[in-house]
Image (cartoon, rainbow, N blue to C red; front, side, top):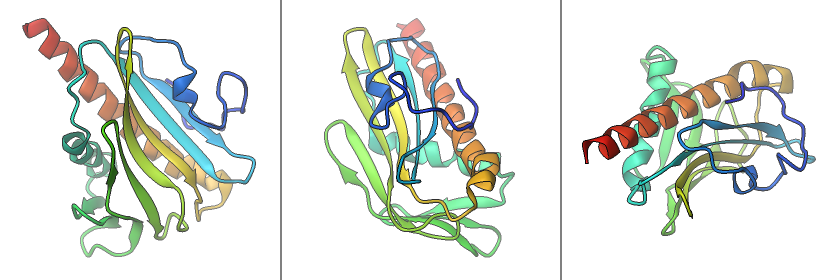
Length: 184
C-alpha cells in the first residue's frame, strides 16, 4: 500500500491501467496516485481476491461511498443513486463532487465527474473486476481527475482522503471474502 504521494510514471506504474501490469498478490492492498503528462490525476487502488468471482459492482458501490462520512467524521456525505453527489453536512452545501449516472458493463461500473468544488468536469471514478488465473482483481480507479485545489494541497488533503477511503473499502471487502471462504 502506498500513501497519497506523487508516484513517478515508470514501467511499473504506467499512465494507463497500472493495475493490469501488477503481479498477483492475494489480499495485498496495492495502488497509488499519479499525475499524468497533461496535469490530470489518476488514483488507482486494487486488491486480489481468491474465490471472489461473484462480486456485484452495483452492490459494492454504496459500500465504497459509505467510507466518505466515516473518514470525514460525518462532515461529508453522499446522496443519490442515479446522479450522485458528495457534499458538506448539515446543509449539503457546498457540493464537493457531482457524479453522472453509472455506465455499466459486465466487469465495470463507471461514473463521469460532472464537477464541484473539488473537481472540474471531466475524468471518472470507476470500479472494475478482472478475472485472473488465481482469482479476481477488484479495482477502484479515479482517472483523469482535474482537481480544483492547488496541486500541493490536492496531494496533502484530497488524494489522502481518497486513498484512505479506497484502501478501507478494499480492506473491508478482502476481510469479507476471507471470512466467506473460511466458512465454506
